[in-house]
Length: 424
Ligand code: SAJ
Image 1 (cartoon, rainbow, N blue to C red):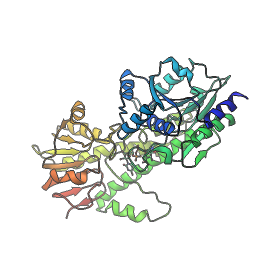
Image 2 (tube, rainbow, N blue to C red):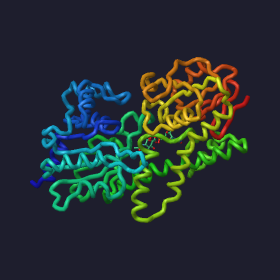
Image 3 (cartoon, rainbow, N blue to C red):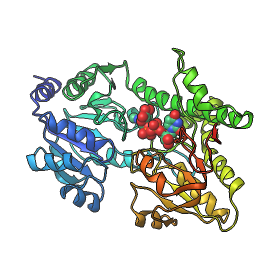
Image 4 (cartoon, rainbow, N blue to C red):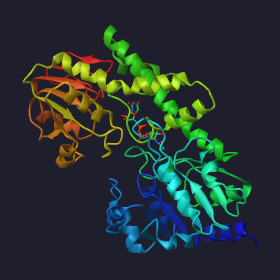
């Protein structure tokens, strides 16, 4: 029996030893899914602190500590440093490391390259490498394929959906592409064991990479379009939420919503990976470029609304710092951009976020505060807890700058939203 068939049998018998490299928002939920399905998973991380936390059952990702403790206690999961020699003892390597932007907003593939270097130090004969990290087309092949490949290679871009409708990624359809049919067969066999939804099998690795770029760039562009409409709506006095709810009755209109800006490790990041490839191929992608810039301007647009009402000595409270509601994640958060803008404009303000500890807020250089009545109340993030919390901070004279169009009825003196206002 050849190596591919041997591995296929091990996968189907759930006897394949799986290494998940990178245990963050992507790697940890995937590890839990694999362990729940009966696989033995070794998790590999770069830093001693992360390793110590994981071994102590601390996932660092809201809502995942219990699952982590369960798979640790059941013995189906153990964590190691990526330098550990037992990395070579695995049959499958699933790469879930971050692909962020550097300070110049250029793609930073450092983590992926470090993993590749480490994997090539081991004997990969007959093994399967799966790249889940988000990269531009041809990146997986360029980094992980080699001329005399005696191992298998698949790309299945992550589709985690932090803090919203899917609690775990088993309910999210997964795209998968292989460098050859043998690799693809192995990848399908593995994901069929953990993904409840249909697998979306594509013809090549590059189609899988490009589909991820398209889905997230599509979202960034549509959010930018709505933000642009909201700026016009503000001037002509039309309520954008009412407009969107009318438009979404059309079958071909997918609703997006205006707001303080676009954060997270996906939507404002992934399109830059595509733009770098396009630039190299001398293809202009002006719609994508303009959309990203439109979204990046939104925190300034909100700051201008605050300044219109601000007078020296007023109390300004920014509620919510994270990039999206009900997620304790500050990555690329537009509210951080807003707060730094307010600081530069010498506007005194305090910050409260129910999901972010006061000491973290202070470490960011902002003053954390408990909720109390304020002159200007800024909705930075529309956490569900805001429905209760607002009563402690908004009085009859409070001006509300609603960066997430959270309030559907007027509260305080006036509610100034994004593409809408509530005056009575
Ligand atoms: N946002 C808007 N208006 C919208 C939607 C989002 O301003 O109509 C803002 C959010 O506040 C946030 C940013 O954009 O700051 C990103 O929002 P998101 O809901 O897309 O949040 P993410 O980053 O968690 O996106 C993930 C992505 N998943 C993957 O990349 C695997 C994304 O592709 C999904 O579309 C998204 O979840 C989802 O649908 O919830």
